[in-house]
Image (tube, rainbow over all chains, first blue to last red):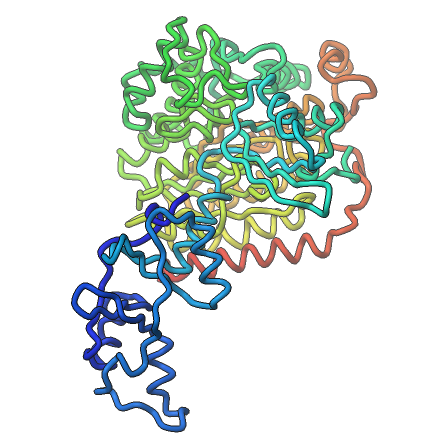
Length: 209
Length: 377
């Protein structure tokens, strides 16, 4: 999944001389939290609702007056992303630098903005239930062919796989979470169990029958 | 007297000898009712024509299902959910499904015309069928066709789904409809197909606040189940004022069901059906249309549905299962069968996590009511 698939195109921007008051009004009106600051066609900073609130708070030692220009409080230099960056690298930059958005630049040109919420949406899409399905979680050894055996098993039963998510579980094993197109997930789990797979979900049922 | 709808053509909805959705289940119920001297007087419906499904399903979906049913297998079927282990392509399936839709629709017509208040359709309940997707053993959504007819004559319809799986098809079809309230109690989508049915799925547009979902913890028992049903249905119906109930009475929340993990007993089902009947008396002058649904334990399902029939008729529930019936169905019932119509006392070992399960279910109900009630003001 690439940044261009999750970003918002044509972002709303302000100039460096825009007042804090006006920037705040734009955020309220458009229900957004991040504004790239543009000097001509060049991105020179980013101002967030948090920047505005901290700068103007009555709790601050020297609160800025509402007419202050945003260049005084904006973050710069600006961290940016490219439309063809994978979203995980955008997520890493945002997480490591503790920032909430990245303006997306194609060359010098601003083409979009991606925020933490867009990354959450992507996560929901990756893990979500797009079609009626059951959830299956299997622990596999971290070696070639393991996942192939699992998918072969499902393929032999003609069970469709809607999504696959895999992540490490300790040093030598991995967990694979699948959404599969069958109602009878328990029968499937029993079959996998009998075939030697370690099924983690659906959980085994000690107090059944 | 309730009207009971059935036609032998329902048996044609047979997805194969290994498939859990077996028509034999209804044969077992009818046979059991006859053996206990409560043989139903059956009203025969007619099948619907394919075109009568177009209000609920997309025309191209219906055409593809009809074609597949007579052996014309096109490349588009996989995208429509057909040819899977759950929904195999079987000759004659579309016609049989139209018979079943016809039965449920006939029930709706009887109620709409004032010819009956209480109807039991001995089949149907295909709540997973979507606008253009076969899913979870379901092809055509009989419930949605019936509800649509009731709405067309000006009724407010409250749909109650006690099948252990979320009623995703019915919810999808009426998601933005302000004339239809859907209430589904089911095992949490975290654990069970179809993976949906969360409290935040509240409906869209004018239908907002009228689509209600209570996902229940695995191993939820009858007491907690009933509490959730009562706590949600009463305030919801006070606001919505339904004219008729449509009830999908799947039996797979029974503790013996192999496909899910809820722990209802037949006694609990009797109470749940009684509660729904009281809701019907209080809110809809007794108007209610019941269908069957899921239910995959052959030991439990026929008994649950026989009890459903007896409760709707106000008949006493005999203690023992007739010996002749046990004998005749011994193949289906397996070895050491249950010899009583109700479950035996303490049919399963105590659930160790009961307090935690009950408190999580209460939290779910509160979360649902918090979210929905703002649309009821």
